[in-house]
Length: 280
Image: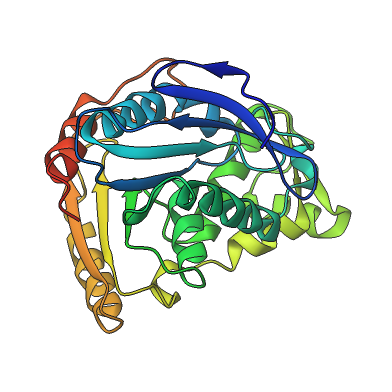
């Protein structure tokens, strides 16, 4: 780990060495004079959703620390303030980043370790946990199918070129262009074919998740009634591996969306209710 960039009694900003380069991180120490409840590693969302959700991630990280958790936030390779271009980002590099971050965190906390993933970060957390057992997983409005995330991302390109009669008019055409040319530019992000293919291949229902509690907080508006059936099927699938899914639907704004500075107090409150007593 390199020297801290910023250090306060509760938050430390620093870069740690990784392969390749360095990763920017924030460490929130557990509140003093409180029983330490364990450690939590945050896995951020995809592309611009990372920046849009920074405030909510910070609010929740501080809340976790106040409860007694040690929390580490890391910008993955090619993302945020870490080194590398987004065009060079790869799923396997991000998994290695999480392994290095988890090792760093476990050296500072002897308690149970949980992954906390937002949006695509939730799917990455689940995938990572399949090969690196953890004590629990926290999912904030996760993508359960990688292909859904990539399609949503590509639809931004369709919006950008709306009105241009020569521009592609479907995600299928954009996907064909991505396959043919190796990358595609969307909202200032150059998405590589290799990363898109790796994300497309991720399906939460097919993952051999570890035997641990998984808390899924569904925000961004009233949860659709049809989602209940999907949740039940997923819970049954994961229960076969002794993973227990707890589903927490709630109303709240999509703070990862274009509206800058949006907060979802209902999500913060729901998360605090579940984890405030240190119960997994």
